[in-house]
Length: 380
Ligand code: CAA
Figure 1: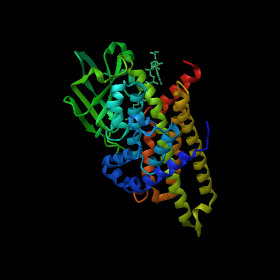
Figure 2: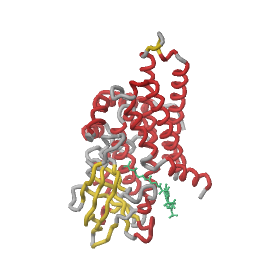
Figure 3: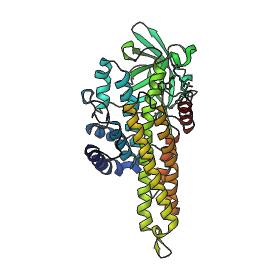
Figure 4: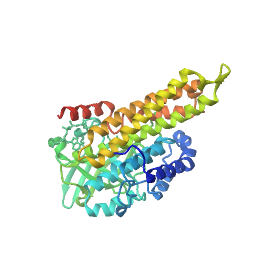
């Protein structure tokens, strides 16, 4: 593993940074306030090859490596966390499992438009009574001829408001718990599919978080991903990759807040000098930059492990645990450096502070990451 970026990765970072500055940043505050889903951003990201960064080009993607994917998510999150998670869900939670577990026909028909950014995907696992305990889900899938009939509902689904395709986890045998869970790729314009309540949240306000409802929803058996009963393992393996994406998002949020605080500390004058001249502020900045670098390296290590190890749950969980908690500390210090101004809507740091909070919750809480880490350490 190299900790130095290649020429291609440096060029990618420059390109995405420019795209983020010109297209994403100018609307970040506005969509945070309005909650408007950034579909236009997703479409343009797709044109740049960012909707399926690590998907081979034969399936519509950019064919890049995992560290490149982290660079993309970090650069977008550096200016807009909502846009970053929209992209991350499409890449990690929908494209990745279709690439790993989909049939050739499913890859041609569903992965290609998702990776090219012509279609938007969402990942439908969580239910009202099945959050951390994902295996407790109650959505059912009953076989009927060449179809399955799905009934149930999902909550907190990022991209749910606008997704064209959903990767849905449902049980063919509730008694079997995780061994009954099966994955399906579902078109959201089918009869029996309905978008339910929209969630109003503390942060990542533009990520289209909604409930999804399935009532006698017929899904052709050809749209089952993997075998019956494989769904839980597909979901868990997918979340390992998703957690690397969320780590990159947390690093990006922290980096964005740090840069705002650095600039502000140079400009702001108190007691006759710039506040960056005070050691208290310097020590904050020193801690922030050190923690961000540590988080970025853990994230890249997990991205590397994804490509080189059969199972990388440990590396992914460690990266997510550290970076999400690091992002709380860094955004909180960034707000402190801004003083009273940081607490107002006139500055971006309050948005970074709010947006950082979700990284400790979605795609597995910090407590779940510790369960995964402990289980890997103890070999249980
Ligand atoms: N890869 C492959 N297989 C895995 C796996 C992985 N990472 N993790 C577990 N498995 C397998 C196990 O080996 C086991 O297999 P066998 O049946 O062959 O023994 C099986 O899955 C069951 O494993 P566990 O007994 O460990 O399962 P559990 O019910 O105890 O759950 C858990 C473990 C870690 C708590 C898991 O439920 C979990 O990660 N929960 C959190 C769920 C989560 O992250 N939800 C986020 C939803 S997505 C989201 O946030 C959406 C969004 O829109 C952004």
